[in-house]
Length: 124
Image 1: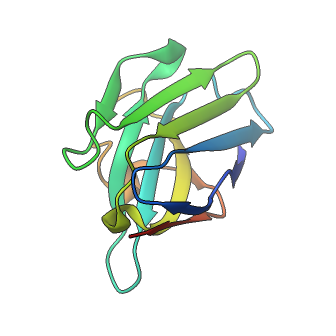
Image 2: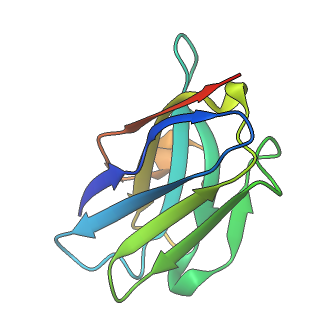
C-alpha cells in the first residue's frame, strides 16, 4: 500500500485544518490506519488511529476533543479533522497503515507503510 498525505499548511491558533491520506495499491479497507506527528527535535508520536470499517477510533490525550479521524473505504482515504489548533500541534504529520487489525497501535513499528508527511504550522 502506498500512502499520500495532504492538507497541511499554516494556520493561526484556534483555526482548523483537514488532513487527508490517500491509499493506493491494495485496498486499505481492512487495515488499521493511523496518524502520527513529529515536531522538530522530538520523536514521532501517535496522534490518532482508526480500525477497519470506520471504527473504533483512538486519540492521544493531547488531541482528544479537538481532532476527529474518519475513513472512507470506498475512496481509500483517511482524514484527520483538526480543530482548535494550538502552537504545540506544529509538526510534520504522517499517515500510516498496518496489516494487523489491532495491537500496539501507538507504536510506530506497528505500521507497515507510511506516507511522506505533510507540514502543519500553527502560529500564536
